[in-house]
Length: 144
Length: 80
Image 1 (cartoon, rainbow over the protein chains, first blue to last red):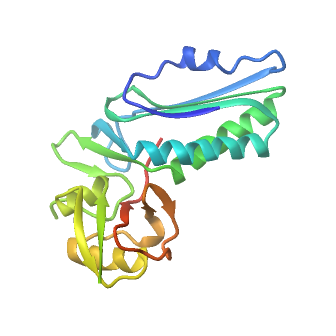
Image 2 (cartoon, one colour):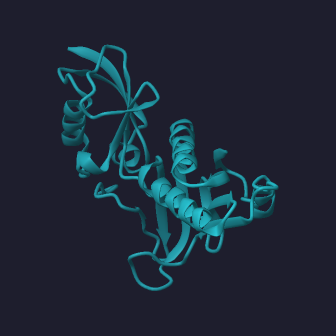
């Protein structure tokens, strides 16, 4: 069970190995990748920059993993989220769950990524092709 | 009046032009302090979409502040 904020490239194979258990018959993983658009025009996003309060993010993330373990019949779960500047195609977040059966693994994986997106103090700044940038989800504008 | 330290993250930090500041305030809760600082710096996000932490622990907006508290203001999150 681990939730980690990292500035290093995410290594899905290494993360997945830690989920292996003799009693696990299912493994569900999710990767969130940096894409080239969000709300704006197609291919308008050049890069993303993620910032987190690592201490509180890892505390809240660990709470989410504990909740998943209580709610679903899973064996293990972990999540890693990048910070720093990422390019299109980079893996920004990885979630993996192992369980005896696939149903609980799918449900827990979905729960962890959804709760992570709504609760964990991580912020995302988009850098656009036209030289502008903006914080996603924020009404507070910078330099305006 | 109490003295606290306000810390800003992401959009709040860039909007305020600083990552922290010492604040003398009559605010008794984190919510009141956010109202005061939002007016000062032009933070446009409603409190319901933001989070606050006091002394490195997530807190309720109604938490009462005491002198010397470190109050962290988090704009709407956007992980994933």
